[in-house]
Image (tube, rainbow, N blue to C red; front, side, top):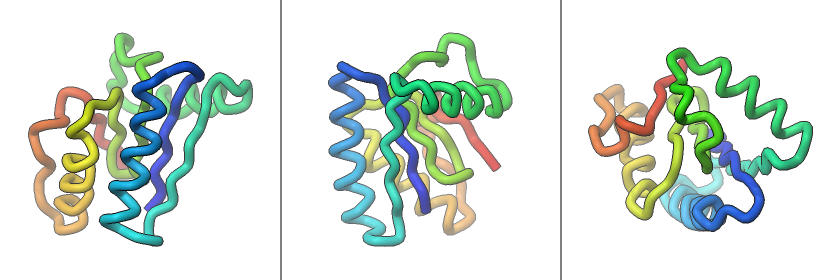
Length: 114
């Protein structure tokens, strides 16, 4: 599984998400998870970010430029971050892998993919 965390410079929430989510996902899934930090303040990464969000059907205009943006494989994308997201992201990954429904806690900031 690949997790991409899109961030910007000087964003303390982005830094917290990068550190905390990486630890949580690695603890839960071990070496089966690859975590990529993508700083969109780097020119090539900005283009990748724009192409990615433009590919998400129904992506809200007010979610543009909200960071961090967390892409979980082709399963779902989370916009923003809060302290309880790690556990909920892990639970949603497990639910999807079991063919179950997603939890309600992240539905306001989650876009389904794939």
